[in-house]
Length: 627
Image (cartoon, rainbow, N blue to C red; front, side):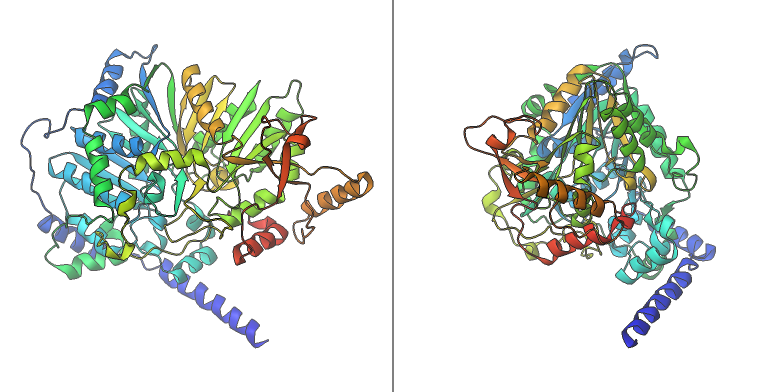
């Protein structure tokens, strides 16, 4: 009884704190005072007086401008580059930032204080100082998290502006108690995040996809890196990117820094602004290497120009920032709606890659109809295993519904191995010649010493680690979100094809209507489904017919229970290809002769996360939307 009373008291305290914090907006007087301080003390220095603002020559930007010039409303021309590898993805960003003549707009979900985050931020500050208009819009919950850094950014240069999207309790920094209070008091507002990723230069060329500004998205983390993907698009679609960014920038949830309580306080208390420091990188040689690549004509040609495709129709879609404010308005979910329509019209094949295989009700309906239609298309799914994901709570829901995915939707599921050799090759390229120079994290002095905040669901910071393994070595997890329909067109974006992407987060992406692009994207996804890179999920072999039937029946009943789904013998498990065998589909009669079962959670050591995964599978069905 005493313990229960303590819990109730804690909840009451959280609710009271939430109500107090929710009302603690910054007064108009303090905003005017902070704005006045910023106006009086902001750095107005411009390092370049040339009309082009000393922009460096860029074959990427030039190709985009040529495509724009050749386009007509009836016959658009685009240049499209698939950014599968992490070093070209970083080099392309640096090259375009240095080539910008007029404007740079950046939109992201996560911005960390590590080497990747510092590098891009410092490049943007330099661009602003040479006269380029730079705007940064970052989701508050997972970005910067340091009022000191943001106070510096508010006055670093007159050409650079920063806004945070949907700040918790009108602050830049969210403490754990505020995180909990936000969930209790204002769940829908707090839970809706801006998941879009975009870097747009001169309204002519943009990069969008899955990567945030954090080391693990560029193969720079020492122990756990993401397999991710972007696409670079130059041409008329960049105008759609610009229009979308402007809608977000002007929305009421995009809050200037002087309107944030903790940053406002720093600005008014600080007085004279602190000079912007040069970043100190943990891996300076690796940073210098990618900066050099971004200016090397031969390297750019080999990695970014030669792989570029000239295409016709390309569309950039984005949900509106009012997605959860007006859920009844179809246009607010523009991107989500378009992706679902694409899938529903598949005729031959859908190749889907998502880190979180948790289907929304709408997606389930579409896949069920496809599977039970005449000449059902093949559905190939690349996703994470428990061994490769850092979002173990989300994985638990995927694990719960394996039978449904296999039997009702016809999915062919491939779960990534944590030490897959395919991603390891990209990692080696990103760290060529620098792997032996790893420095301990404590030797670095980043721009900001802010702490990584509380993370619950994975993919939200470098301190969030996956479950422990039975094997050693660098680990890889899947973060790419892409889809190819009938090998005719493909989509690369931020949408995870899950309930959170459908109903809460705003999402964005590029759809390229080109067979060659679709084939490139398809091959990239299928590489991650190869037996050396992934386990296959398939039904257990039915060795004892009566007992197998009984197990299936009990498992089916258990799966459909919202609570107490505790039956341990699931319908499906993980399989690995035997030596000297060719890959087969699970429906092939020779499947069990060539594949061996390796357990439901291969390579995962017994740990609290494994136990929690089982518990969420059993009791967490109601959290699907949140996850």
